[in-house]
Image: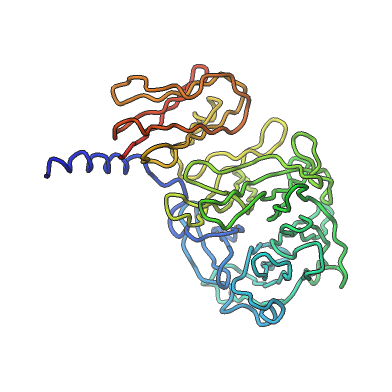
Length: 419
């Protein structure tokens, strides 16, 4: 009986060697719609949730929960939005010595929504001056409007003027100017400028705008969040020489007509990455977002990647902090082979890979003795993200190897079949 357990225990041991965390460490679970800022020597992340949870880190890697912004949903918000349960999609912005935290109140699927504002002179909870003061409603949308007042993002124009981008579904992403004294719209009936929308579907939201390389870059999320492992979120981008647009993608398609270039999509166990923020820094830029962990019940999880820029000044999702699978050497080789999902698996698994240039690719499966089992791909491929399914249902339980060869470079991943 004990001898029968040896193969099972061996497979479990091998699975522990294969499955490793690809995210940050510490309090990184149940983070949704993250917004990030640096205050003194620490980084702070604010996210969707009960009373707006706050997390802190000194190195962007290890995070700790340090409290919440509110004790309860503001009374004005409960009165404005019947049935509101959570505070959504906060955005943190520092201006004239004050931290401005914009947040959204709504109910799922409705555009009866409001954006509110809270302020603080410090983000350090240990500081005696630490105190969040709610400044009330900023802007709201009604069921008769063709826009939705959620997912706020504040951006400074190079002229010094302050603007608020926002929007989710309906007619897409909007922009309006803020009064630099009140940090609310310049008029009671604000002018809304359209920046981006979808044509065949309304599924666009979560704007985030940064100014770099002489362009304004508009990051958005396409498709659907909040479905756990079935989430189809992905991060898209366009750019413009003007803050108010028009924004175009890499192909020259305008974002007002459905344009958008892919920055990041689902990869292996990590599903539906989206609602990103961007942190620009002297020592590098970072892409901050949530993604759903298919190895952990689809829990939304914080991830941070290096944000790189190609020769044409377009943003590229770089190495994930703490991820040994994405070494600089792997990117220099012109491709990335991601760990398959699921792994271990019983009958079939999906293998994702990314090509950074046009190249001939071979993807083959070998057993532990080095014998070729099957060839999955052997052809010339253009730059892009790809997936291939390997059906190993006819094979015995055990350890197998997936090898991707492109030019003189190769990469290998361990695959484990458990019957």
